[in-house]
View (cartoon, rainbow, N blue to C red):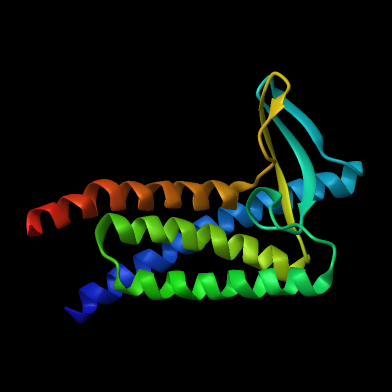
Length: 166
């Protein structure tokens, strides 16, 4: 039993590390391009560009302020949320656990950047004609997928469990 639990924990840690490293590698690549070219403005296709911006806010540039104390407060709040995700992850099982792993891996990637660079490098510019979505990064993709999965889990899985209890 202990060996089985240890194996599950190691697999979960490996998935979080894989997500974190995927994010780090993508950001390091973009930052190297920026260092060599002095800019990143790469046309991929008519819907996707890589364009480097530095985000001091949270998801999609929200709460982006120039004052250091606000930045530090937001970073502290994100750190507390990451700790809460870890606690929830310990208690979670099944689909919910893997959804939280996605959120945790992406959150750790962005938290690392906030601490190391004092901003998060965002570079994926998805657009349709002249409508540009917020510029984001690989960590944001994992966080968003994890949250969508958590919403799905809450609406369909937990709702069915609650209906069966009545």
